[in-house]
Image (cartoon, rainbow, N blue to C red; front, side):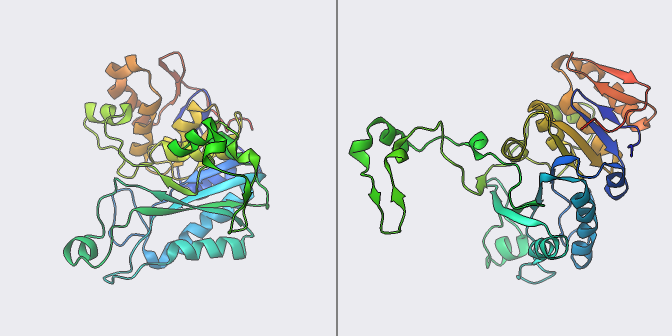
Length: 335
């Protein structure tokens, strides 16, 4: 099975324009180590990037997930970011993100390895009607992120995503005898001497506090330089960075089937993982190439963007600070 010619390639990955339902059929079974994606949410108001009506959303998304199950490696992971939503004209939450979770586990035999919650403190108050006007609901600032797998023990290493110790824990490491005494706590937890060992960082929680505040990145600057609008619903880089570090190793393959501005691919490139990006809207994927350009390429940006929009040639973006036209048809990066 081979994919069509990519829109552009880099040292580690390839970006493809097209319907993910079709493109997924061209990927080898059990070949992807991590599928990490954020599909258009089931919102009431239509967005420029396209979103599906709530009534149809679960079945629509399930069709993609069936194909993801086939391409995912036995030890791989599927990470699905879903924002919350309200029912139409009611201050009552939609359950679509929980319905799709149950359907994936009940009908496809996915395991819920762990639920994560992405807290975005920079998120604006919404929905306006219930939060700002009537003031009867709190601001919705958390997305559910389902970490799914095909087996009980998918590849994972939490040591790769340790977080800085608290100031109190740093003091404890300096003088353990002063701050705690090894003993069993009333809760039943046995706090042993090893509790004071410095392991280079603390184990993170499943609440990921990551502000989505990208405003002056190279991607944004280059979009502005040629007067095009950036993708309106972008991942913060720290979100895919956490899961790629946690669930993969260098050389593994990461797939995003709703790539948008291809933040996932860019982070995978930085972390030396092979990556594949699918995006249906050509202008969004063409602009996503800006993430991979060297700092000295800005004067050629409009030329690159127009070539990508024409889709006449595949562009190879290299690490040598330049891009070249590649007239050869490229295929799926070797797993």
